[in-house]
Image (cartoon, rainbow, N blue to C red; front, top):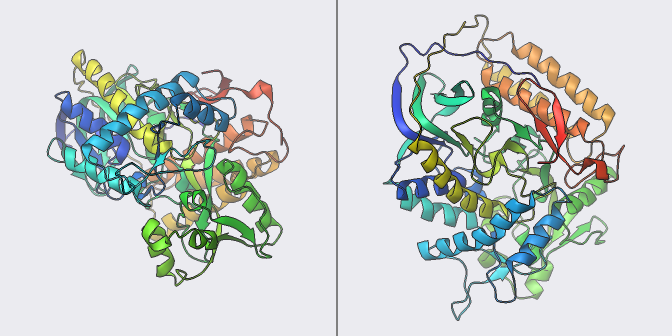
Length: 523
């Protein structure tokens, strides 16, 4: 995965100067921005779309925390480490489960309307890999409920610049200097003391995925080009139960439906897997059924027998099913879809990356808390916990930092321009090869084919003068393939059919350094 850079001539470009820029308006970005504002820093939030259009706002299931008297953060820690298959950064997991509990209490005090029983006690559900019922929820729209509360708290304490995406990060001597953003027509230079990246993951690189449509992972490549180390790109979590209708997107059906009693059956009505196993195991079990020519369904009839109304408990899922005329069906067709990026920009629990002044938080960051497999409902917990900590880290950094004024001249590429049709064709070509060869099951031969194909697409795109965004996605895809090829074992979400066992030699993290080869290292 080479470093490429086509810098800009910033002369004449509209310029804005602020203390801190937060790119991304999901829960990670909003959490960081809110705490920054409490510390006296008014952040500029840059995003492609409004906050309500983000992956975290789509999160259905809930947020995990050991809040019940019969639970304990130590138990939550054990479940998280167990799901992570031996390569979690354990000190960061402890921060997640201990400080995360405090942040969830903050959310309660902020007014997030978590579901409660008749006595006013918060209701908890159970999801795969958890040994206790510890998932707080707002029916099946938890992400939207949390995000809406955070947005209302921050909307008057931050500046928003919407309709822009990250085009370039400017650095000098491994220190952040500014960003170039674009709305597709005009470029904008923003100089600041520090930058927080909270832009989501890279699951949309796969044909079937559950992401918000504007999320793509491109900012991870931009960060890589600026000098940030990437880590564990081979670990992508495939959600077991996305609605499967030919020609339709992979709409998520929350794991909490299974947590309340729904079961998975094949087209003969046979139950074939424990629905509460970690997601990678359930997803592969379903995937194998499809390889055998079978279909898989989520049987929701046990919920009705327990007196649970799908419409009342899971209104988002019910609305989705109603959209396709399936709301009265007991059997819902499902198959796996790329859902969550475990890898990303290597960061500490305080958001620090390998470049001074650049911080990363949320799904685009890799702090090692998920190891090789994310425990269900730990992602929203990560956003609020590490967003809070990152704000303090940014505050101390800004105290001693100045805004650098770097100008970089570019040699503009001439040549033909990608049409909308060409852009779609190349993107779909890449998604298909990633789904087929670097998805739920991988092998050396398949990964080699994927690498060759992605390289071909890169070569074709390099001829165009407006291919920067797609090139970023292809280089990220290349990083995933190279990381998967380097890990010659199966661990968590990474399954190699030619190396089906875990190996002690690979209890390490896959780090990609700018200009250097991939290294397997203990973080």
